[in-house]
Image 1 (tube, rainbow, N blue to C red):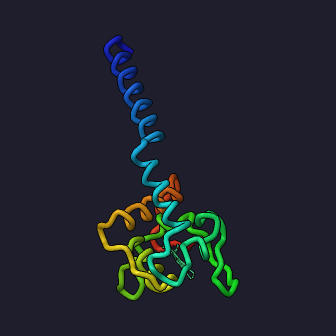
Image 2 (image 1 turned 90 degrees about the vertical axis):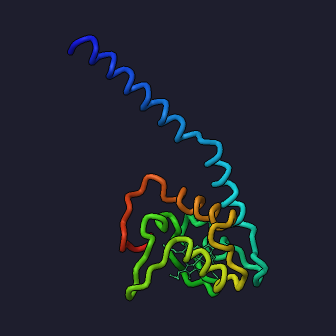
Length: 140
Ligand code: HEC
């Protein structure tokens, strides 16, 4: 290997390490994840008093349950299996969040493009960090 390609390797390696470090500690991203988690555990959306965590327990990290106790999967891979297509109808992760607010919480769903919907979406996607995309997959 000549000296020039050795230099090139060192530069590429350094850039990689620097960008990786940035991705791991991006304060803006961390703030949005926190904001989303906060909404997940406290926001009632002027509904029936339930919050996301009422059913999706432990921030969605473990198996959840309906108010009647019926178990349901965690949200750990939700971002990896959405958008979902059923009978030709597409449901994005944001559609599903709004559905749960309108249905399960009987509240006012946050508008598309809103800060709240964005933060919830960032939070849920952070749960699936590192998981392979599995379109058509089942929630775990
Ligand atoms: C009363 C219980 C209840 C509450 C409260 C609730 N959900 Fe859900 N959620 C469900 C049920 C039941 C499903 C699965 C049924 C379905 O596919 O529509 C579901 C599905 C989901 C899914 C899709 C999971 C997957 O992988 O298929 C996401 C994402 C989700 N909820 C997010 C939220 C968020 C965010 C909130 C708060 C804004 C919330 N939910 C509040 C009951 C609830």
